Image (cartoon, rainbow, N blue to C red; front, top):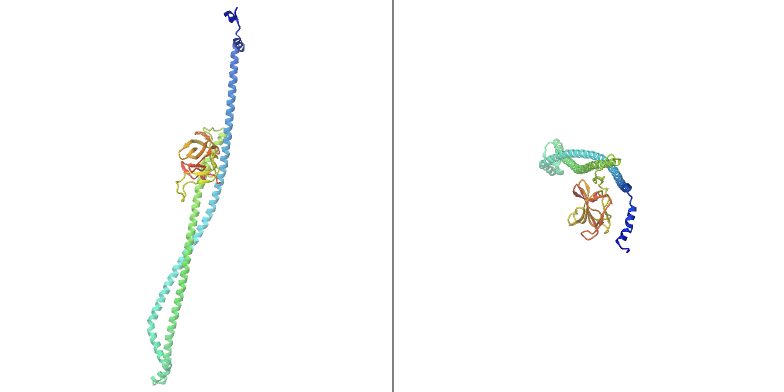
Length: 411
């Protein structure tokens, strides 16, 4: 019989089916093995999910703890600044009090000088009036005096002889001589007294004029001293008002940061759950933000008087092409793509209408919607519009551009 006949084929054992049948459990035992395999797979998946969840929870905890430490450090810095501002204000208040006393003294000195000057002016007016009266009297008496002096001159050395010849009584000669001499002496005394009075009045007038000029100089000095004290006091008052505003802002920022810190601690203790990933507000970190890139500032915020180019809403930081660009604070990437005028641009939303912009990037390291931490890479430095490698960085607070140099750490 041919080996390929139907009978031979039917009687030939099916080794493949036999092996498959041997490999499979029969009856209830087969179902039990399948269930056991599924249970093991589900258990492994559960363990992996649990492990992943634990790893994620641990990562969130580490991140939250880091935020709490940063908030604590910044709160300490804000409190130290508050103490420094309070000390400065106390010092300024002391200086202001001293300046107010100095201003009062200067005002009193000025008042006294003006009183003395007014008195001197009154005395000077009286002396000048007396001088004018004496000069007028001298002018009025001058003709009569001149006539008598002429008569005396005409008598000369022969006056006794003329008197002797003009009188018949010799006893009268002595009397007449003495009378003429007495009249002459009276006239001479009047002239001398008048001259002496004029000299005295002129001397007093000169002294009063000197004193008046001295008082005027003192008055000008006192006015300048009073004005200087006013300016100094106003300057101290302005500084105190500025410090008051800074202290109010400091207290507000510290309050915001303390609220965030307390929430983070509640999250860590398990008493609260974060609906969103834990974050810190940006505003309390004014002046303490890390730089987005290393390098000098080659273009500043705004427009200088000597600059003819349009005002800039940000700054440009010169850096090597391909240098890392990092987020200045935690937030969510609101934009990561090419934008006209900015090249490749990343915008990070820090909440409360605060944004940081990173332009002229060579490459992007983040995508829209992802959360970034402070210091995390967002891209690399590319070429600016001028052709040089530089990062364009802009900061917006309450939706308005501000000078980033006032917010970044001092280099």
